[in-house]
Length: 152
Ligand SMILES: [Cu+2]
Image 1 (spheres, protein in one colour):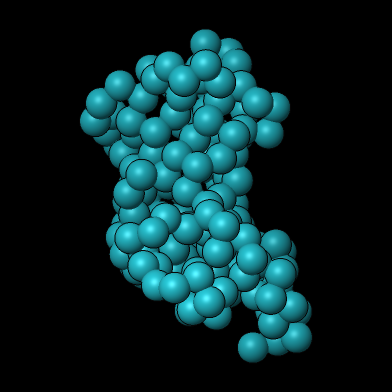
Image 2: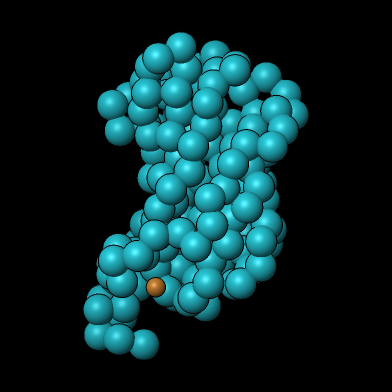
């Protein structure tokens, strides 16, 4: 691991402790602090940058695989908590420390329920720190949320 990676892991650990849901790390709080959130989305619910929406990653493979095309399911709701229906959901992202983007272009393939979007085509081709930006365009209101993950 690079020095940068080690510093980032150390910085993310308290965040993981605060935000991971109990079923993933059902351990004592002392043990949780030492478990990095590898191969899982670090915080599964995010407000979008400008506060128009709230986006939640409700389903991914567990653990999120390396070098395998797979799907994520997300839910989008308004700031007031209503499902966002009929939105155009876009995905980009990459590894900021490596200055490269995603190797694929994930896209919505199915709307499974009100405000719930199945996005196929995720692929992460190397271990390390990734960011995934999920853009929501609903009737011309555009905003995006960023999800972070550490893969190994
Ligand atoms: Cu990379």
